[in-house]
Amino acid sequence: MKKVLVLALVLAVSGIASAGVLIGAVDRSNGQSGDRAWIGVFDGNTDPIVGTLADGQYVFMDREYPWVNTPAQLAGAEYVLTFNTDKNGGETDVTYTVTLNVAAMVAITIDDRIPAEWNSDGAFATQQDAVDAVVAAFAAPGTFQDTGLDLFIREKADGSVDRQMSVYAAMLPAGVYTFGSQDSGKNFYSIGAIPEPASMLLLGLGGLALIRRRR
Image 1: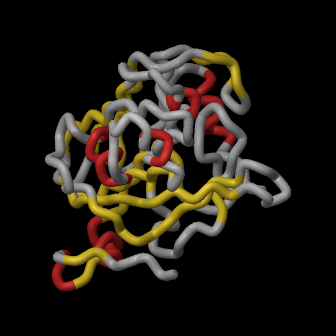
Image 2 (image 1 turned 30 degrees about the horizontal axis):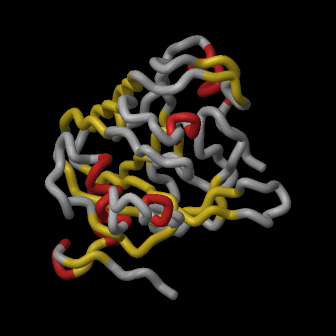
């Protein structure tokens, strides 16, 4: 299994967050604290690093879960290794503020088990509602649309549990964007960015229609 680059690990442990070409600074605030592999001890303001999406790379800062079955359209994208500990139900204050250096397609993943857990209280009726809540600080409802692509998180080394994550995305200009909490016990979201030319592979009709999921 490919591991996150040793350099990235050194930077994370030293408290210096690594950044990518598309994704610049990432500031995490008011999150959960803990002591988990692979990062070790962290607090609510420990910043994440930026990785390159590929099978075998870790999804989160605080879990040894790798990506598997990564679609070719998303391979090589930059992504923020968020903290899965921030998924805790009742966690409503955590934010990830991302600096986007250039215009790009920005993506957010959402566990396909969401929003079933909220059906009883009616907080979110659809997966789209849950996505809209995460990006509410900067995007109107429906701005992020389902690309029809999925990413998978391998939670068991034997491949018996591969959690499916739907990918929602929107074209955004360079700027600073704050992603909010996901009050859920399911896997926390990831934030990704795809460069402008490659991002058009995901779009049809001049960017008016997102490709649909292949069943």
